[in-house]
Image (cartoon, rainbow, N blue to C red; front, top):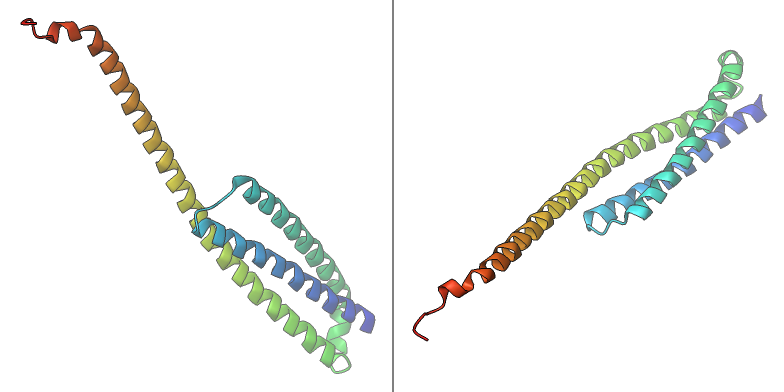
Length: 157
């Protein structure tokens, strides 16, 4: 039982480490999009890496839950004997919960930054299209006016 509690504590430590990696990716994403220097290929790569980290979290969660289900009854009956380990485990769970809330907030802020970035990019593309159309229309009207330019010549020459 003591070994199993130690494994659960180690599982929480691993989960915290994975969550710290996710936070680092979120911080990098935020700085890239705030500065307006986003590279879509890098963004896609980072999203894939974060997906892998999330899968690790899910595996750690399922392993932890399975182990907890097996030990729950024994823990309730032997609280005093394993009090120190239970407190350590509870503290780790609090840390995981706090970090989870922090990551969710980061994700929400990053989503807003990404939406702003793409809205600006979309606006830039729209303006470029308008400029190109205006230039094309000007070119077209000027090329047509050159054909008729002889009629505007001064006949006194």
